[in-house]
Length: 248
Image (tube, rainbow, N blue to C red; front, side, top):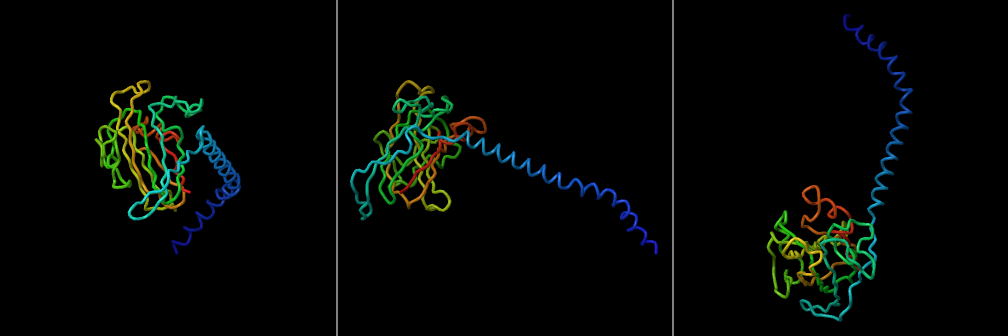
């Protein structure tokens, strides 16, 4: 039959090439493992170099008594923090970001906040930075606060101009922690382009009921960074425009 020799020829020619492949296989596997270990080591090193510890640690909310919300008595606590146009500010004689880029905007005096669970939390933010337009105007609306409102320089607002935003304080539960919780408060920009020394600020106050115990992540949704669509630099470096809300 004419078809029977065909399988025999590949069989004889493949044999020599298959043998070297089997000999070099273990070496290739070892090289792959070594490369993977080196890669993991480099990634771990890069993450470690970006590790950030606030000079003042975690800012714990101050108890101020109790309050009735929707017929329920809750513990009432307060928090106060600021947003800065650069990272050169000092807290108790220490820089806000000891190893950070001083030209980057930052929250301060820390990026770590702690509040009790199921409590009314009243926050006051002094926003010292300039700003611009949000990529998504949705974040110009106050969401998740009592009544979905905030006070900007004493005036009650439901939203602000999406083209005049300095930063946002946007909080979400991390996976496994109260997925229904969401908070977004836009912070208006200070007029002008150089806020580092003029001392002007926008005062924003709002209240919200904290969720269940766990760790929540917060970040700024205004593109105030560098590089890719202004979401690089401080937007991508933990501790400047991001942090955690610890509910205990």
